[in-house]
Structure formats: structure tokens, C-alpha cells
Length: 329
Image 1 (cartoon, rainbow, N blue to C red):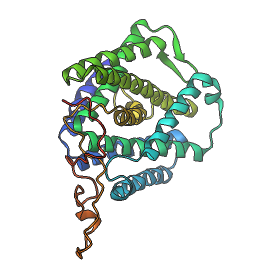
Image 2 (cartoon, helix red, strand yellow; image 1 turned 180 degrees about the horizontal axis):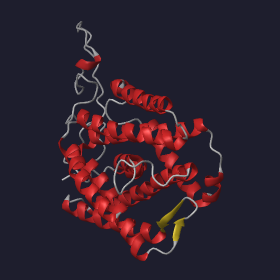
Image 3 (tube, one colour; image 1 turned 180 degrees about the vertical axis):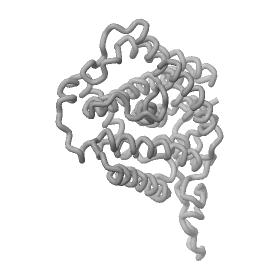
Image 4 (cartoon, rainbow, N blue to C red; image 1 turned 90 degrees about the vertical axis):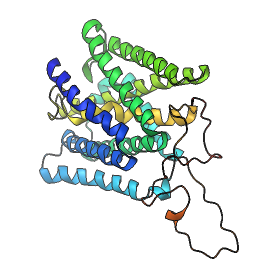
């Protein structure tokens, strides 16, 4: 089991790192979108859709929402995502965290309607795609790479600490294998990594403290994402979401933590103004009003700061709207 996990990780890790660091924003959107659609296929099964046509229909609905978000990006989120979008996602995971803590037994026993399960899965997958793509678009590769590496490091540490020292079950009704000691190990790894990266990035003392706390909250959210999928598997009566990754299970088993963590990390990065790059890459650009004597027609795609495909061009910064980049160097 461990051997298969290691081999799979050694094969996939370089591909994922290369996609994050070297693909352009649209290329990364396609890459992450393919992973999300694979997760949608697995979620359709976890929800109880058995036929090929019904599962393909669910994947098609998720795909349609991804295309719509991308196509209409210039209208609803040309730069930073609007607050009305990402704070409800943060609230969603906060509520689930409370529910996991207070009523884990009841969550397992509830008879969830099929429509509710499909809607919940679509919400998590679609928002996870949007937040990750805009994280890449707004904050460049460094912030995305750190998030992915942070969740990976926390997950690996939790696994080995839990195996070696884990005795106290975290939420046995939902996920019998997870332990409190494993979570502590994940948080410790997150703190160490955040301090190391923050010092390397030469963050000031306050920014470094913010960065560490943001990393800890991000890892805590990643645990909620893991438990959310564990609940779905428990209700469905399966061990893994799929078998496409030897030693790891399915695609959802690998991205469940990221789907929750990215909401906290994106909102926290904007709220605290802690960035790992020299400049914030894509803030909202407010078009200037045309002079009265100007008679030329300008289309939305001709405005400064936007490209032909609807995203704000990387590197464009609006000084008036730019958050204080107190962590830049």
C-alpha cells in the first residue's frame, strides 16, 4: 500500500508541479478543469448515480458551469473575485466544520436526497475550480504552488504521525482512520513550512505571523474537505472514490483537501495582504471614462488590462485597488 502511494506520488508530483509553474493561466485552467471533471465523474457515483448517461450528464452540468465562469469572466470577475462569491464558500466550509465537530453521528445517519448530494458536489467542485484558477491568475504560480505543497505536506505528515503515534480518533463515525495526533502533526508541519517560506520570502514580522496563521487555518479547512468526502464515502458505503490512482484511490481522494483549503487561502491572502510575489498580478481594472470629444467605439475587450479572452492580463496592477502588499520583497 505504502509502496504504491510513493510510486504514484513520484510519477504525479513532477507533472503537477510543472503544470503549476510553467502553464499559462488558461493552460492551468484547462489542466485543473480536467481534474475537476474527473472528480465530478467520481462524485456522481458517490451520490448514487449508477447509469453511464446520468453520470455523464452530471459531468456535463459541471463542465457547463466551468465554461460559463470562464466565458463571462470579463463581466463578473475581470480581476479579483468579488467578495459575494468567495465569502459564502468560506462560510460553507465553516458550517461543515462545526457540524463535523458537533453532530458527526447524525451526519452519517441522515438520508440525503439525491438532488442535495448532487448540488453539494457541484458547488464544491465548481467553486474549487474557480477559486484555484483565480488564485493562479491573481497571485501567480508561487501562491498556487505554496498552497498545493502546504496541503500535501500536511496530508503526508498527518498520515505518518497518525500511523506512528495516533491513538485518539478524530471523528470515528465519519473517518475511522483519522486521529487527533495526525491533525496536530499536520498543523505542526504547516507552521514549520510557513515560517521557512516566510523567512525565505523575507516577510516582515507582522506579515510572517499573518502568513503562519493563514497557513494553519488553511490546513484546518483542508481537514474539513477531507472529512466532507469521507462522509460521502461513508454514506455510499465505499472505501475510496475511485481506483484510478494506485495506493491513493480516486481523484477526489487527492483533491478533497484542496477544494476546501483554496477558499480560506484565497480569501485570507486578500484579507491579510500577504503575497509571495513582488507584485499583485491581476487586480480589478476600472476603465477610465472617455473624453467628451471622443467618438470612437471601444469594446470591452479593448479596455486596458484585459486580453482577448476575457481575463485581465497578467502583470496589470491597479494601484488604487491593489491591497497593501506588505509581504512583498
